[in-house]
Every structure is written in C-alpha cells, then in structure tokens.
Image (spheres, rainbow, N blue to C red):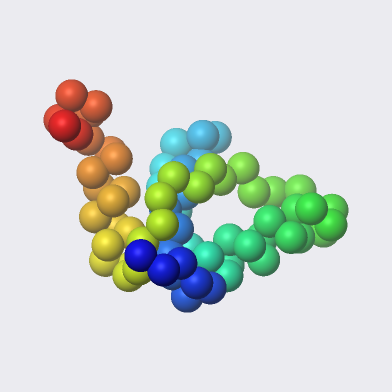
Length: 71
C-alpha cells in the first residue's frame, strides 16, 4: 500500500470514545495547527491507514469488535 495525502487514516478519540476517518492531508494539517499552537484541540490517535474511505470504515468496524473476535 502506498500512503499519500489522499489516503485515509482511521483515528480514535479517547475523550469522545469514537472513531474518526480523515484524509492523511487533513490529519497532517490538524497536527501542524496543534504544533503551531493555533488549535489546542486534537486528541485523536491514528490507528490505521487505508487507500479508500470504504476500507477505512471497514477497519474501524473491525476495531469496534471485542478483541476475541478480531482473530
């Protein structure tokens, strides 16, 4: 898999306890704003990369399953 700015990232928010799917470009732009002190938000943890939005949703769905079912 080749990751580029238009690839997708599956992120997890520990405070909101939910998944978020963004493009790599969006994730990096947000991280740069946090780094520069422009936005104190964030708090998402990147868990996986995907080539398509559908693939990212499937990954998030698999991650939602209890660990004993992930085999």
